Image 1 (cartoon, rainbow over the protein chains, first blue to last red):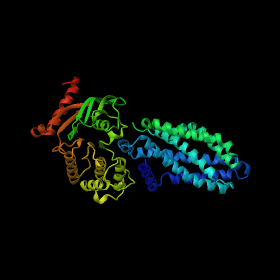
Image 2 (image 1 turned 60 degrees about the vertical axis):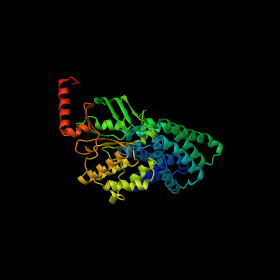
Image 3 (image 1 turned 180 degrees about the horizontal axis):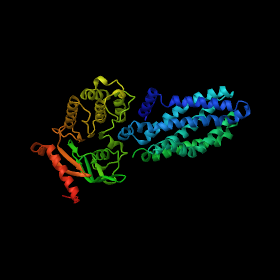
Length: 217
Length: 245
């Protein structure tokens, strides 16, 4: 799995195909939101969770689009299928690549939006929430990217299938992020955190069960 | 028997590509597989490699049903098809190193160096694959397939795009692999290539093996004229609609 992960990261380092696009996208979206909420500081704070997650979700889509389709476009997926590699490992490596991109994107968008909106988003709790939420979202996105990769309409199918599946996770993530920003007690965040952890586990187990069917002929 | 395929059927949408094909491979056997375009040669190799599943029939590898998800069975098979299955943004060496790690190959450094020398790619090992010509890609793809020293090597028209010197290098490599005990199935349109190594020439027409010419037969008969006769015979049978002649 580490070999697959290393290969994908090395290719991205040389091609600069996905991550720069994601970074430009999140900075632009953060700027648009900050201008839209400029006159209303109270709204800015209550909307910050939604802005952060909305930004990360749509930038992650760019990563999902390329996760399996890049192998198919280069006709290299057969090479992975021929090798004695567990298909779940292929799935996990693809998921981890997008997750790393999302975390890097988050490390950019959080300070940028903090400066633009004058709210402190650089917070260990928020970083943990982003990590936890984006892990589940990346699992769902990679699963559906694998599912839709054989379709001609994969670019359309991915968001149409992914957003309803990931909606409970995203709602919990936004709620927890807003709770942290408003200084809520840990007990008030527990339900949201439980949903996120549960979602992460369910999606990873689903991927483990379905990867042999989803990846391949 | 290394591989035993029985009653293989494969259909793509409305076209039946393989119709009840039987095929066997013995250890250290070199089989040339010829047939007209669209006869099902590539499909057969992809089935044997586990990249496709048969609609009917079964494939046994070492007496066990071929399972496309079995990592132990994949370790046994090497496949080089029309697509090189290489990463254009990695160098030739990085590509082979990547696949060597996936196959848990031993002595990776030595094996890679040996293959680069055997296929005359030594001077290009640090160049990105995106700069390679078709013939170089073909050779690197063959190196990728041979990297883990598979017990069965499936090659789909490996001599296409190769110049005379590269074809000679490939001859040497295939000879060495057979000597080392690997079985090879090679599809080809040019019967001259690999003929001196082949134990059997099979002709695939209309979804099944129409005829087989053993090594002894190749000495007595010109494989080219025999092949044309087989195709003519198959065509006349098809025209008569008899199916069996």
